Length: 195
Image (cartoon, rainbow, N blue to C red; front, top):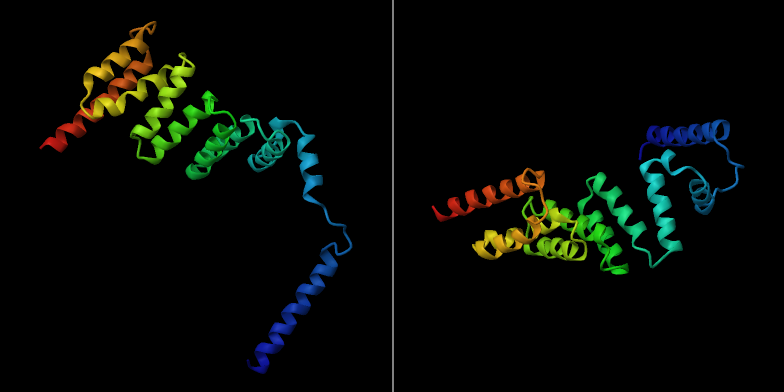
């Protein structure tokens, strides 16, 4: 190291120290994270930023270790931030607390489908099917659950499944349009694979 470099390094350290003494707060007491959490917990949830909401949900998860809801909503935040793997882990964590928590079953299936390129794989289909069986109002989940069977050529089984779900649905229901789009994509892929 040359003498000039050493002088510049010492000058930089002295300048930084001087600025800290002038502008910093060296005598300020530490502010523990617990105090920050308590401040966040006392605020209106609508006023929280996503990182603050995440901190609040993590605190709720510690306070109620058996509740699936905090983990589910952590997953929702992760999904909004496009952190697919983190969202998947959060939804799985919610389901470890309650394996019949339908919002997390559907959300996990959606994340797996997105991760897998928008294709309903057998893994996501099982989750969709379980959600629909637990809550028959989850028509979208029920419709999506039979797509792997349709893609594998078991059209009869898929159509029989869809017939159960279509009961009570209006003919122009957008979910039926969604199903037709998925079926058309599968038909195109199967036709391309056959050529």
